[in-house]
Image (cartoon, rainbow, N blue to C red; front, side, top):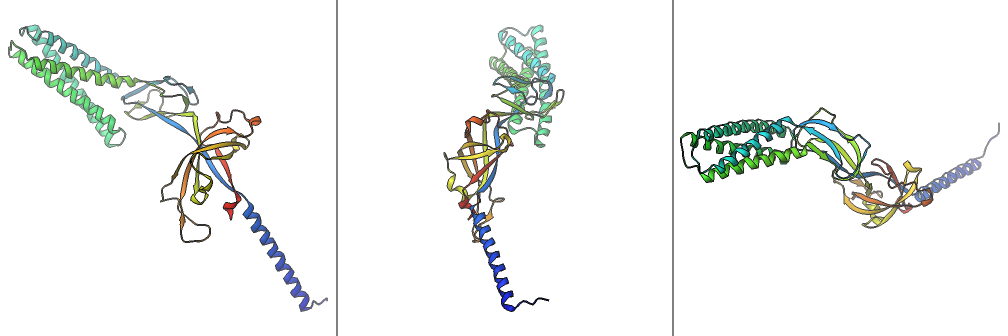
Length: 343
């Protein structure tokens, strides 16, 4: 059996240690020269389509994926309840105007009868407005109806209440045999009736919702025949001409990012085609979730910043296949930083 001397063993250990040290140094140098890759995502401006009318979806005029232009009809909503209120309010307005023209005439039987009908119509409209207010109040407490929509419903209730009181006053005065009508009260009745009509017409204007801008229908949340609550989302439209990339980076990388600066990114969705982006927004994220210890082990922490940048051009124009126009939310963007950030 061959024996090895102590010197031979020591030399072998030295060789192994030296080789390991060389490999370690080579790996450290290699890793330091490796660039830092940050992954971002494409987002686009979006618009949520909703209305203030309580009713049911009568017809959806678009489907998911459709391209729409500004002013295109998206959905029509049917609301027989509001239409009935408007009919009643319009009748009240006509009666109020008629009564105002007859303000200097005597209290004939026909006038008393018309005023009674006006009062009964105003009373029915007030009761209907009160029921709508109670339903909307419950939806508001459940955070379904927005404060603005609640204010509109409350305004309709107050208008209906004022119209009911004015009509009741006119009827009681005529029934008592008054020969000289109160001009101020007659005018107030007209204003109350007209205000109620305007409020209901404003609600019914939302029976046909149109696109506020051009874009693509990305999501439809309700189907035809479904009940629509005031303020509830019906569909979402994304503006495909306003896409941008969002990056979340630590503050020690901010040296190369500032408002107006450009950087390059590659998109896996387009065969890793390179695209230039221009920074238009830089802001720190909430400190509750993005503090990280510094890489060198010091005691301070690093804040994460969010950067947004618009695409400006495709670097390889020969390979450009309309990539900017084809950007869609959720696409990945890989940004390569200088290897100095790895040191």
